[in-house]
Length: 478
Image (tube, rainbow, N blue to C red; front, side, top):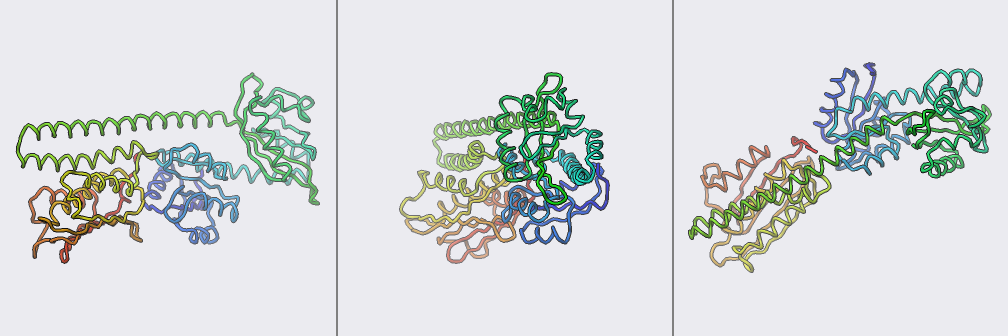
């Protein structure tokens, strides 16, 4: 574990709370460090120079910046700094993209406890890489000293000439395969590579060799005991002191255990995702059953007051059920797209038999934005109440008018929701806090207590209700 207090970690993250969680996890493991948080390209570039970080931890996706862009900048300006991607995505393709793009590792936010191990591994790998470069320089000065050093480590070291034929394997490498330098020199070592991996591995090696570029590959190699083990093979071009190209030098590490852990993690995530989708599906089905039961009771009651209560209750249940439907259909089981949800909800309300077709026009201006489920359910209920109230009460009799629904994010990141109409408005000196109707009490409680937001009514030429809240305090569950 690295306990050097001169360790400097640069966080590229737009959510301060996520950084605080990461810091607590790292400090909890005994790590001591200085840190800095940025969330824009300009600040990141400046911090690379001024803060001179030992390590970068970046969120994969942010509103104004993203982890892959930050990684590309870091590789260009500070290629020796290890870069870890902190992502909320469980998609295997995301992880592969991060690693192929040059990241040292990736950590899923839902498994933040792995972050200290990833940091230590990245720092250790960087240290070993720097040591390897020093050793390579020493090799050019004294080949015998280098071979002695190579044989003393655990890395499986190899070297090849300008004809792509291997000329050297260190002692740990030969002990690993159980072969001899005579048998494995040239292209004899290829017999130890798994037949299914051989073509792709050689294609990657030859392509990098011809371009004189570093490469890193993973493939299976036969160990002396007859087991195939996963190997990470890193190679670099080598040159004489005078700049003459001499071939390649590289080292292999046994990563079988890491592969096993990653596969177990992938399987666990797939099982969890399947379970959650089933849970969302069943929850929504149960809501549909409740709505059906209420409708039966409404028909049996033959009472207009009961019918009104049942319809309003069913609308509220439907708004929650719609959240679960969107989650069930989504790739991300923690978030839904607010625009997609709002469009469906408003469409449902307009399809209700009580909607005054021809008298009310509806205009929507809703930004596409992800919203966590903790925010989505109360936000959906508030939207349903405000829009339903406008449809039912803003235009009495045969009067006509317009209802406008606007949802977007402010520059500060808060969600801004407004439902406005040009109807009859509210009475003078109206105070929504003194109202005892379920609708006003529900709206007030949802906004102020659950969303921790603010609520404002304005009545002049019609009525507008403005709701503002931030979902930064909500936690991603999956």
